[in-house]
Length: 172
Image (cartoon, rainbow, N blue to C red):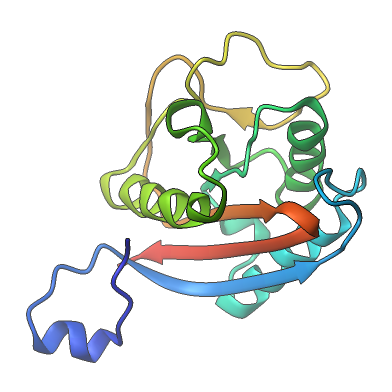
């Protein structure tokens, strides 16, 4: 899905660098086989670890490609974690409304889409989102793409069994 290599190696071969993978965070909360921890403790730990690894402050994040499974528990929990860690500044989208949940491949697909959003400065809308739960207090992109400069973007992947991984991408 993505070619990861050292910047010097990419320059040496004349590669087009689309973004930089600047940080990574992971956690395992083992709350339930399929349901997220309602407090989002593992997801929050992964986000904070990724930001720390990247040397990025929460208020520097412009865009989040959310795990966003379109389930009430997952989406509300993730939105609360995002607001708690990042505030309401970053714009949020989820691609599963277009791709479906591809299980083990979801993170790779979403990382590639996050890189494209960062590179092109266009956040795609969350497909098929007609109304947002009023309890969700983050800026969700819906109905139409949103153009904005993106310097820092997160790609969240929260898997079965409480496996959480977050990537921080920065502009190349």
